[in-house]
Length: 45
Image 1 (cartoon, helix red, strand yellow):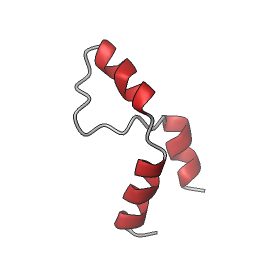
Image 2 (cartoon, rainbow, N blue to C red; image 1 turned 45 degrees about the vertical axis):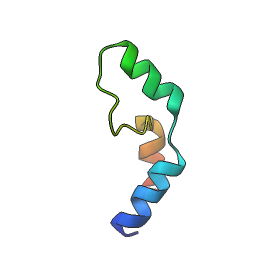
Image 3 (cartoon, rainbow, N blue to C red; image 1 turned 30 degrees about the vertical axis):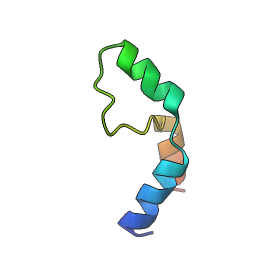
Image 4 (cartoon, helix red, strand yellow; image 1 turned 30 degrees about the horizontal axis):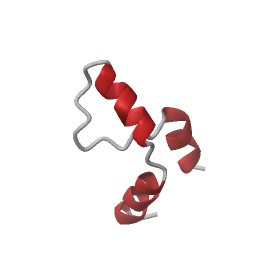
C-alpha cells in the first residue's frame, strides 16, 4: 500500500462526528479526519 492509498483509505473512514467531539474538548480539529484508533489498527490487516 502506498502513502497515497493509505491517505485515501483514511479519508474514506473519516468520521465528522468524532471531529466535532474532539473540538468540544478543545482539540484543534484542523486537518483531522476523526478516524478512531480501532479503525486505524484494522486498516493495517
